[in-house]
Structure formats: structure tokens, C-alpha cells
Length: 541
RNA sequence: GGGGAAGUAGCUCAAUCGGUAGAGCAUCGGCCUUUUAAGCCGCAGGUUCAGGGUUCGAGUCCCUGCUUCCCUACCA
Image (cartoon, rainbow, N blue to C red):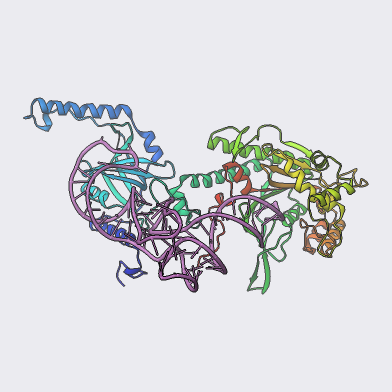
């Protein structure tokens, strides 16, 4: 095995990679280290642009032309006898990936890219750059990471440029880069080789940077409200807190089956029982379900619980929090929070969010009250919705109401106005406190809301149930298969019941989908665009 | 799950009715000290996603499979 073929044989290496390996070797022969070393005091490319000094550059240029004129007038003058050379130009050392190279023979122009700037120009001239640096400029490849050092000047066309006195490699790019103008558009390569996408398409990186800022802003906001961030188990013996198929795994030491969590809810509530008054968790959840442009098998939610709060408390927090995130995003991207672009929409986060009751919205959209079950059933059948289960038994009236609601009423919400839909039927939210005064109504209500933005469900909130007997009865009810509705629990968590028996204060709970919020704030239409590494089907080779 | 589109050189894309697979960029060789997708001259680069079928002949038509994207349904 030679140094040039550590893994593959020469025949298997693409000739473009082969060429790059040869160029790397040629740089080594110049005495340059192809993979670089520690660099202190590097300027970011943006900082380098900002460090440019117009006056110093002008002074340098006029002193140069004065010397030239003097030389022309009297060619016999020695350098010492010419007017003094003035050079107060700031000198910077920068690093970046080579995006473009224009070789004019004895002068090579490079455009570098880094995290701070998409393009910054370096001039490598035979006259002013050291010999190894100049030779290296001629044999570097697009995609290489380089370090350049030199004074800042402006070219004839007015572009701020680092006029290199030295140039050296910092890392080799052995892979042929995307086309320099059209760039990388193949979505499959963009997702599978995100590192390539990120430097070819700087907007991709900007989305991830903004995502980080948004999550930090969320933590800052909640900390300011007195919430404490906690971490609860990802590996659970029974995955509860939501209705979803979990990923299963196994622990060897204890020889037990474990699930990856589908929601942090039941553990966060245990902390309330233990006496923590306000807790939240930024939680990676895992659901063994399908993949599409708004679903990834692992996704991030933020759940919070506040002792002695209720769903109204949660509404105030959610509205303030979402508006805060919009403010951060608007500040970063430019624009204002009363018209945040999302696809064809402009979403208004500045005005008070819309609040509408479930029943109210139903009646507005359908034209008759949801308690008119005969019309509900007739309308559902007219629209071809499911009104009975596989074995022919008719769905409960309330399930049919909800089918219609999701089909018609949910779609009637103005997508450009964040909207809270309040007071869901209690039958649909078995783990929620019933709304006082509605117990004897034809459709008893629960203290729950859902927040919709741009047609997406961003998250629900509840006044939580803290009566252990009712909770236990609900658990058993669902386990018995009485309720087929999907948004229900399917596990019986005995220890959680015990925790409620110990006594949980009345509380409000809130869950927000972080990925979806980031989609809204970054104008991304697919969840894959806000996840650095979305789930992809493996490719066999 | 149902429907639609796509897959051709490293990248971005062409290829008319089924008739010799092309271009630009990148690479390689040459020229060039103020370029901006630099320019000029020249060379090279292909398992047309995979497998089967029809045909004298298939990138193109048919079948199967793989992958990606879009629409639709569902979990957030």
C-alpha cells in the first residue's frame, strides 16, 4: 500500500480526485503542510472587510505613484533617493474555502468563503507574494481551505481585497466541488452530504445558525419567567405522554426492553409532584412513524409545566414566546414581525393572536352547531368522512364532530394570523381538566387549546388533570380499547398514578414543536430544511 | 398508504419520430499582473439509476425494482 492509495486502488479513485491528490503532493513539495495548523488572531472575512482603511490605502497608492513619477523623471535615482513609501494599510490574516480562482498568469485572484461572508477577494501576485504561496495559488483546487495574509487594499473596480504577502493551505478538498455558478441543487445530495450543501449554499448554514439563536432565545425567555430547565429520561420502560409507536431497544446489563421516549410529559409532571414549580425541557422525541415534509422520526419539542397555572396561563406564555422568537428571527433576517414571509403568506405575529372557541369555529365554518348531531352525521357522510369503524359500529357523535372539525373548521382558520382554538370537547382530551360549568352540556368541554400558524399545528396546552382516580380510570378506559381515537394514551404507567396519589398541584402544561417553529421563522417549507441531518433511507453500495 | 414527476460526464443541464450521447462549468496542457461566473487556444472525460423485454437498432417504448422530490391521507 503506497501513501497515495490508503484505501482504494488507484483504478478506483476518480481521476478528478487523483488530480487533487497530485496537487496536494505538489504543495507538500513546496514545503507547505497541506492540512495546516493552529492559527491565532485570524480575522473573519467580514472583520477583514471592516478593517479596510480607505485613507491608508489612498496614501499608499499616492506614494507609489509619486515614486513611479520620480523614477520616470530621473531613471538614475536609486530606491533610497525616491520619495518615501507610505504603507499604513492594516494587515490581516484570514482563512476560508476557495470558491473561485481566476488565474491571470502572474496574478491569481481567489474568492474565499467563511461563516461570516459568502465571498472575499484575495490577490496573489508573483511580485508581492512569497514564492511558495504564489506557486501554491497555481496548484490549489476549488474547495481547498487556505490561509492568506497581507494588507487590505481596494482594486480598480473598488473591491476590498487582501493583497497576499503569503498564502498557505489549511485543508485539502479531495472531492470535486459543485458547479461554481449553478451550485448544488440536487436535494438528495444536499441532505445526504449536508457538509457539502452548507458551503455550497450558505443559506443552509444560516438556517441552522438561526435555529440555534431561536432555541437560545426560548431558553432565555423561559428562564426569565422563572422556569427551570430539566432533563428527563430518553430511555423509558414504557413510553408515555402521547399516542405514538415508539422505537424499541434493549438494555443488556439489566436485560430489559426499553423504549425511546415519545414525549417527556409524565416525567415533567413527576417533578411538579416533587415540588419544582415551573419546569421545561427541550426534548428530542422519537416516534416510529412515517417521514414527510413535516415529520421526521426524531424531532424536538419544548414542553413546560407550571404549578398553579392553567391553560390560560399557558396561552399567555405561548403568545409571548412565539412573538419573542419572531422578533429574534426578524432581527436576524431583516423584516418586521407583522409580516413574516412564509411561502406565499405574510404571517402577523405583532397583533394579538386570534382566539376562537372550538364550538364557535365549528359553527362559523359549518353553519350549524356541533351539538346538532343529526346534521353533523349527515354532513360528514355527504363529505365522505369516516363515521363508523371497520366492524361497522358507528363512531361516537363527538368523533364525527371532530372529523368534520378537522376537515372543514381547521382549514377555515386564517393562516396568516396565529390562532388559538380553545375549549376542545372533553371526550377528545381525556387527560385534561374539564372546563368548569360545561359538565352537563351536550358536549362537555376541556381546558385545552391548540395553536395554529400557517395551517400548521404548532402545539397544544392543557389545564392538567391531577386527580389520580380519574387519571387511572382514563388509562384503563383506553387500554380496554373503548376509545379508538388516536390522540389518546395507550400505556398504563402505574408509577405515574402513584405520583398523582402523592399529590400534584393544579397545573398548566404546554408543548411546542420546535422544528415547526423554526420552519416558520426561517421560511422553510420542509422539516428537512431545518434539520442538519434529516432521516434518509440508506443507500447500499 | 394512494397519485404524479424525476434520475444522462465531478456539477448544472440538452438530446426532435426509436437511428453515431452533446453543451456550459470544473479538470488537464498552453498564453496572460486589476480579475469579478475573467478571457483565448487545445485535450480529455459516459455501466444514460439497476435488471429484464420489444426491435435490425433503445437515453427514448414496455415490465420489475431502487432512490429523490411534489400532491394527498395520517401521527407533532
